[in-house]
Length: 156
Image (cartoon, rainbow, N blue to C red):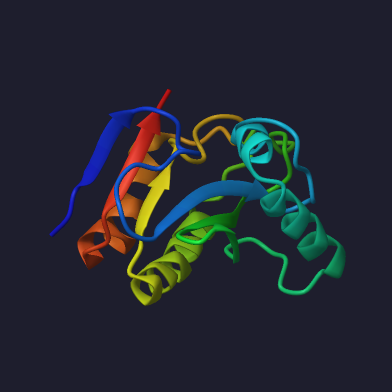
């Protein structure tokens, strides 16, 4: 069984060899412009372009879905919709939706197995989305590391 590896570094520059997937949390309203996506957009234009096209198309653009964007021969970015809106709701509930993250991780596991890829990320869902790592980490463990997929989490 794998465990999550924690490193200091930049998640847009995943470490190691072989195919890699960089996963991050997106919102469900077509907003791209704050948080980790800024670093992604500085490095590659395709993740944002594909996300915006996906949003405009409306095809399967909903919580729990994942869009894979190949940015280099051995690197993909997974745009995972795990956030409802970009601000807390009327009851103060933060935008993160753990069930959507869980569903997205199930999909990501299948994609990672097919590509024989490792998965790389910042502490997804814990910045602007308002999530708690102690709720996100078990979702990652259950769906990725417990399935034999190596995961690296990057802290700047």
